[in-house]
Length: 505
Image 1 (cartoon, rainbow, N blue to C red):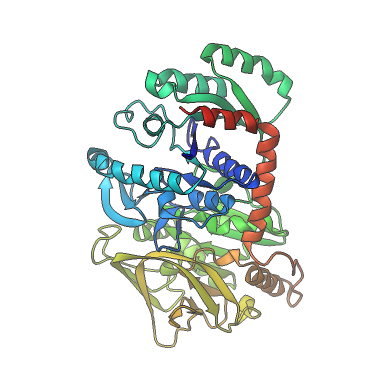
Image 2 (cartoon, rainbow, N blue to C red):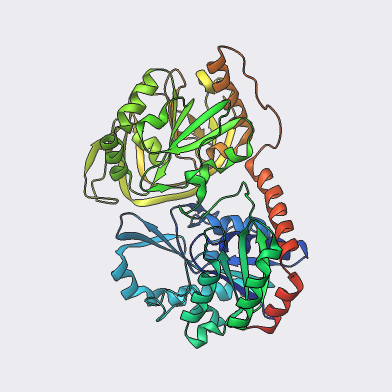
């Protein structure tokens, strides 16, 4: 029997497509189905390294987890990672194929249509159901010709579609109506139902609008999903997570909001930990009072390093570090903490070489080849807030094009368990450290000990805070996948959705 399929498209980015696909993957898994997620083309700076050594969107990795599968490059055959406002790195089946401006990409994108179709067919041949996520809006009328990402793909493979609208941002009726009305007949015919997401309030007040919308479009509103937050990875920078003010908590963390911030999913775990307030900051004054400053990943390290200097953040971080504030850097953030960064091949920009923040004795040189691997690092003994973490093993993944060499006398942070090579760097007092490992803080045994170390420094000797619980963020996410599925099951008629899938497109 061929796999059943369903596409989820949205009126805009961040309407809730990714979470709904995640929920449906978990609901099918609960019922004993073999189900896989699929997104033909994803534009995101949040990415994941699969066990195959390929790079895919972080949302598809989360959806695979919800489905009980190892993430695969087949689930996201094309990933676009913006490097500037006009150019993106094109990753096909997990590997870098090109760096292209948007007009150049759309001029040649048809060459990758067979890759998308073959990836989908392979998944459909292995599983009983495939839940497909669209990209952005399906009604971008300037991009409809030759579409193999949204409803053009649905029409080609016969997948019925649900259209999701975000009521929290306002204008949901106009967004749903306008999206459907802008579609050509072939694509419009693929939509079999509407879903309203992020609802707060009394459903009875919304009901008259739902009935009128159904009459105008001759499509059923299958459900209204209440507004709820989940400690799960999010796909793009439109998330409101980046704009939330940090809670007035015992331990305050400040993540520097770089213009080309990537993999902010590295910090989603802190939403699930009590007594921790995390905020994203882009001006020097916002660093005041932080117990830990974090430099995150970036898709254009040198451009973002310039931003740090021009904004005054670089000097503010140096001053805070000198005053005893802990500073951590992950991936590009690790590179920025060093003395120098060189891009001799113009991998990310034409800036050549720039001095880093100089908080670690390290120098980074960009190479043409990208390292994308799952990894495990064993921490070396260290001082300060890291004092109780020596010997712990941290699991995660690496995605970077730079190689970092340490100065003589600069201590490494850890050892890679795969080949024994030293990795990362840490200052002698343990208050500045950097690592290439994404998912660094997802290792909760480490993170709890580290946070206790920050509390100890802050209080002058008393660690306090949470000391036990799940060993990894993955255990927390499993509970969140179940909670998300519960919400979807209570809000949507699963049997009707299954009937739509059985009827096909």
